[in-house]
Length: 461
Image 1 (tube, rainbow, N blue to C red):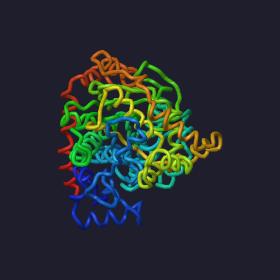
Image 2 (image 1 turned 90 degrees about the vertical axis):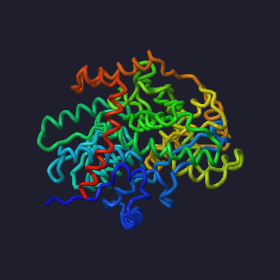
Image 3 (image 1 turned 60 degrees about the horizontal axis):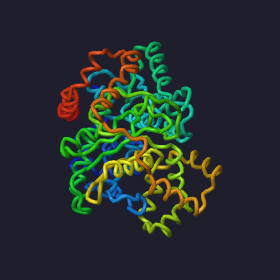
Image 4 (image 1 turned 60 degrees about the vertical axis):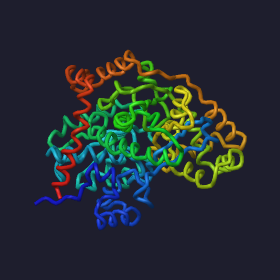
């Protein structure tokens, strides 16, 4: 008889406080005492580690954002591995496990990634009894490779940096061809388990957070949800949010240096985790209300302010931030989190949102995996108080509404059509499968599978 860890349901990832008290206590202890114990599957959730009943979020100070709208950031650094991407890695794995497509100690799981999903896979796979491998570009931060090894997986480096996803696909194809009996690809860009995690867990977390925001800030519903696209998993939360708050705008973000949806653009960039020169299969582009492009150096320069002692001093003395908020900015924001913040500011200005409007976005990871990037930036551009103040004023307060497109029917159809070149021409999908995504019922059917998956996961126990 095969033994396996106890796996959480989607509902238990949404409401970890409802897990049985003994199991909840074990998982809470293991967070710090045994972070590699499989019981930490039950720490895949958006709640605070010190208060399981409270969503882990930060309301950005208006003194920093320069807009009246309430910008609310979900904090992901307290997930196992330090990023919410461990959730999709788990969801993709458990769905394939339930379908009988993968078996522990028989199959090697391959996680194609540019960073956090691969790190999530390197943690999830071995915890579930699988040999695991991550494929990611050689130009990613040193910390990413170190974490993958630490969690017990191997890796293969491919050419390039953040935007070189085709090279990752090519390596996946090679491995599958050479080892068809043992290699199984866990493709975050096409597996709907990624979509389902964010639709159900992230999306419903935001829906429930709205009541807290209304009581605390006097907001009225969720006015917008902003997310940069890497795999386009996180932005799936917008599908659920719009079902509850129909006036919510879903806004996608990509780098100015690689504006794929904006103008069929291409190029390399420094926002690790987003913008990959293709439109992913799981991206519900026909439900996206706007698109904004963010400059990568603005993200790096602001992260330097958030994480540098000089920047911390300026935020306190010049902008009046309290010590707790400064500490959260210094420990909870990575490069893509700053990108999401800038996108939220653009969204507030573009749609004319005010103090009673809540814009929700995500800090996908913390600065811990960018120390090498920041060390290099600090060496090349030492931060002074004047420079820190200037960056907050020029990048945050004076953020423009350029590089934005509304989700008109024509633009949405163009974004959809871009999927053809990756998924039909290269990855074996059919035109019929592609065109099926134009029907909202296709997405509703994928969303509805969560209930049956939860029944199957519960039955494993």
